[in-house]
Length: 116
Image 1: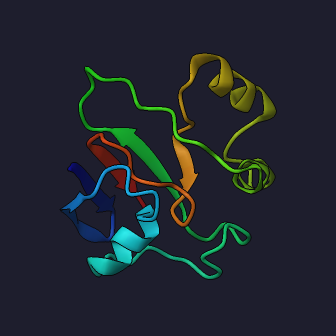
Image 2: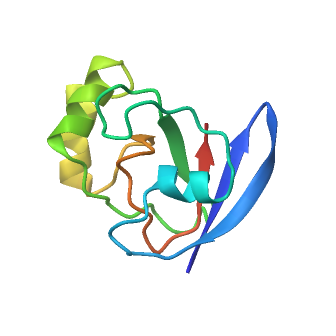
């Protein structure tokens, strides 16, 4: 089980349990199931409205690398959240960028903070 803390300046923080590695439970799906008001439109990684900042809660552990689709990489570059250099460094360091699309990111076995 992973703990996911959703945080926003407009709403109180809410921590929920996520089934780690389910391969189907995205951050957006988890948010919707728990009535957390993340903005979204397409749910397919095409619009960028569900962009979130994901950081590790346990500073002793480095974030795990999460597979990003080419669509997600392209859109994050397009909206200015990551650069080509950051994406290349991500491959070398095996660390994901802090900006992700909630509809694309699968919850891993780690406790994370999701800022929306």
